[in-house]
Image (cartoon, rainbow, N blue to C red):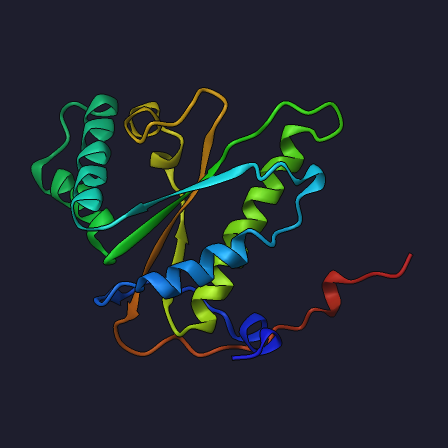
Length: 184
């Protein structure tokens, strides 16, 4: 798939199943991530790849975090929370890992890390891999960030769920971009 087709046709795919991306596909996605705009070439990102037991350990972190916030959580709600990281055969955790730099503020490094995740998503789509970028309260919960080994200055920008699309992909609508453009 050429670059413009990938950019113009990418959609989030929420229903994912096996197989997960293979190593070659992952390498392509990470190569694309490394091409994100990055003032100062700081590479203010890193990624955790969660497969099988990694997804299960993330599920338990989600449950621990939820029970800390709401100790009387109903068992069916606990089961629903536990199932979230198991909705796809692979998850990549996109982490902003800012560096001290006199000319590149943290917000700019967060944008660069977000661009790296976006490049990863587009590369997944170009290889016919379904992907969904998710965040939610677990992305900033101390139990989850600590459990995943993040440093104090790091933050989770997203959980990228990856796999083979399970069922039809929602149809594309041609967006009118003109309301978002203005000459000045």
